[in-house]
Amino acid sequence: MSGNLRKVRPPVLNSKPQPPMTDHRQFIRNFSFHNCKLGNQGFQRLLLQVFGYLGHGKSSFINTCKIVWDNSAYNNYTKASTSHGGATTDRRTYQLTENIILVDNRGCAAMKSHEKGEIFAQLANLMPLNMKVDWCQGFKLADRIVEAEPLVQPSDFISPIFVYSVGHSPNPEEKQELKEILKTCREMTGVEAIIVLTHKSTGKLEKAEAMFRDLGATHVFSLENYTPKNQSTSTEVDNSVLKFLYEVVQDSIFRVGHSRDPQKEMTERKIFVLNYIHNKELEAHIQKLEGQKAAENAQMERAIKVKKEEAERQKQKDQKEHEEKIRQLEEEFQRQRLRDQYEYEQRLKDIQQRGKRK
Image (cartoon, rainbow, N blue to C red; front, side, top):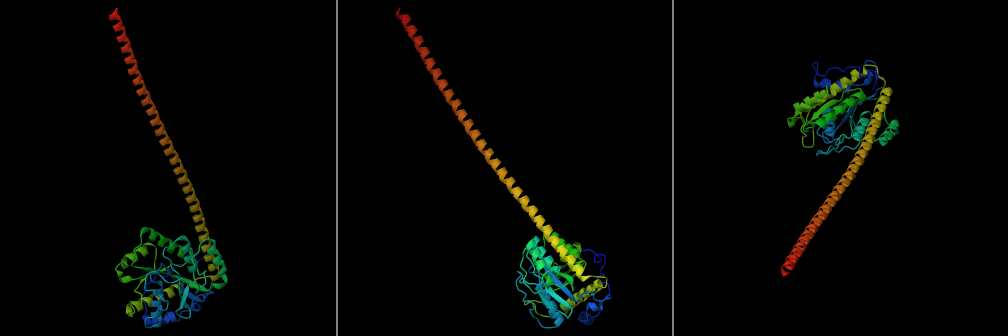
């Protein structure tokens, strides 16, 4: 994206003493873009865009936020699964306050090119809310984005929230993938993705925090979600959630305190995602051509190899036939030599006998 978004530096989180949690609640409850320094500039709602891999606790995190905010007993608002397979197939919304919406975006098992396109289309708020997300790729995805134009609102301000389970140990390829996702998210929305680490008690929290710091993340939170197996409320979890929400709202207010144009930003996000789709389609087409060329080369190499093997077999066959003919000629020659020797000896014997008779 272009414009002033990249030039605005967000405040350093956790740099000042935080007010009591009751003040956090009041601050969050009273939040409205109308109260920003320059007014709302066309923004009406704050969308906390929760995204990430399947089974890393996105839906459970939203449950936890709702439970803490409502100050209620455990409630499975999102119908989060107790397994680790991931259950969300829609872009579901959950009202937190009048002006703050939690969005549970559909996750994916592995960020393949077309799935990343879908993820970015959801993050850019180019896809309708509360509708099923069917993975598709290429121009089909581009067509869906265009068709969804009347159903999306540029007045929604986006705050990307990436949920990641501490219990997962990524390999180098996955780390590179995470780096690309966070970088693309920042370039597309102009906002750094806020990292929420779940399952913090697995013992790998410090390692996960260090990994995301190395990947360029500046806002990293950690907590244990409330789940069907872990329904007991905790002051630590409650305070972690309120602190998270407070700082996300603070960051959003800071950003809308600078000159913005919601319609222009949505157009730029749309162009970004459509270019991303186009480039990935181009890469896929090139890879397909390269794959076809490699297959043709491999087929040609196999054909050449077969011909070489056939030529070698024919050569060996000819060599054997030649050697057999030589052997037969030598045997015939030897037999003839023996016959000639025998006839010679017989003639010599006849001459000797005639000489004796005389």
